[in-house]
Amino acid sequence: MSSTQWLTEYAPLLVAYWPIITAVLLLLLSVLAYQKLFPTGNKSVKSPTTKISGTRDVDKSEHPLAEFEDERPDEAIAPPLHSADTPHVPYCPERLSESEMLSRSEAFYRKMNGRRSVRNFSTDPIPLGVIENIVKTAGTSPSGAHCEPWTFVVVKDTKIKAQIREIIEQEEYLNYDRRMGDKWVNDLQFINTDHEKPYLEDAPYLIIVMKQQYRIGETGVKYSHYYYEISTAVAAGFLITAIHNAGLVTVTTTPLNSGGALRELLGRPANEKVMLLLPVGYPAKDAMVPGVTRKPLEEIIALK
Ligand SMILES: Cc1cc2nc3c(=O)[nH]c(=O)nc-3n(C[C@H](O)[C@H](O)[C@H](O)COP(=O)(O)O)c2cc1C
Image (tube, rainbow, N blue to C red):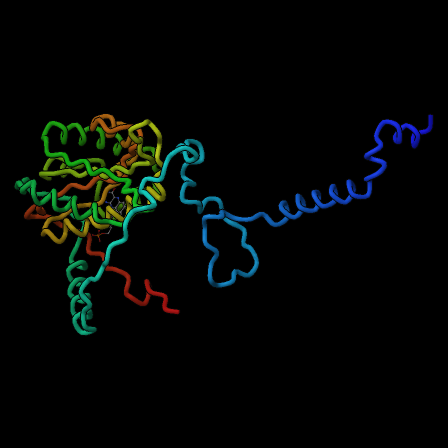
């Protein structure tokens, strides 16, 4: 039996309709090839009103969750932190005249230009209410997708302050003595610091700024905290501004290599990491600061 006879006997439909079957298969293949070549985006995202010309290579490190390379939260199953039904409410702040804007911004600049990092503290107490207002102000900071990825641990207890000092001084001794090298030590000489940090016990309060990589919901689901690092840094700026506004002083410190031990001492959960430590109080009567100046406007502004 020839192959044509075999086909006519066993696959009569294929023989009768082969032109149509071939056309359908070609059509399917073209659709698949088109989808592969021109993938469509997320249907729930509105297309922009302005035309985008061409495509750009996207730097994966710029993804807001890029920090989660190894330990990414349960993106697929976690519901949005804030409901899509969140109502929008009117926002009408007072509109200032141009002269009022100029004089207020000038006055605020002058105030902020008077801020200095202080490393010699008075032991005089300050009311807890002031610290609470300062922390509340930090909490008004913007954050990626309104995740508010921060905790401000306020330490008043003298024993805990002494333990913090011990941890930090031990690590700082190693940082200065061998870990960080001559370049680092030389670059910091103008500040006149060493591993000894008496302000950690002298200042009436220490605020430890914790950044939260994610939060764990009631069901145990991990919620991503977008841009948690940048958001917490912005909030720290608010905190420093609020401390200065209250007539108090601080020094922004990064307790190098002490983060884990401090987190443990303070009993903070695994999703939090120490970002900064800020002592808060009055300056000591004999407090001194390095006589550095700030870059002039022309060096920090780029008008286009
Ligand atoms: C991210 C950051 C980390 C800092 N770390 C330390 C620190 O560990 N110890 C310290 O004494 N000062 C630290 N400082 C304070 C700087 O030395 C200080 O801001 C700088 O010398 C400018 O002085 P000023 O704050 O008085 O304008 C830090 C500041 C920043 C913003």
